[in-house]
Image 1 (tube, helix red, strand yellow):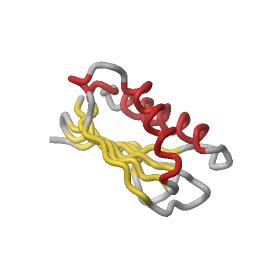
Image 2: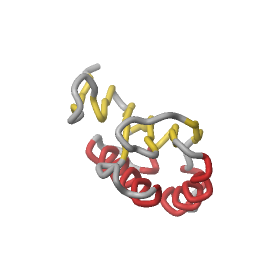
Image 3: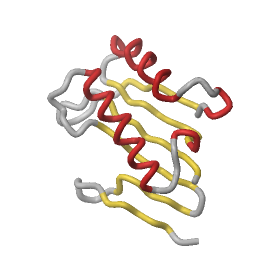
Image 4: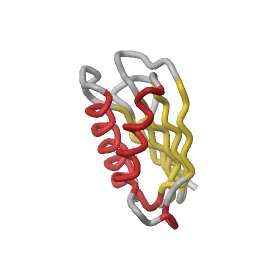
Length: 116
């Protein structure tokens, strides 16, 4: 089984890796100067682009880990996530929100596993 890797702009890592039917992706905001809601919108858009690029979609998500720097932003995250992921609970992934220190002004980062 062959791996396909889409390199990141940052050295030493890939933004998306596909192995057979599995897709592993990471997403964050491209503009760290935005507020939480702005970074969240960019992160969700990037995650969707990565999934589509690898032949998957939101419906293919199996697991998402969301790293945030401030749990005061979790209600905004939960609201935006619910809108983004949709109403079909048969397609909802497992999700965890984890407190973290992030570099470069980022307020959140998402790490996802999906199938294609």
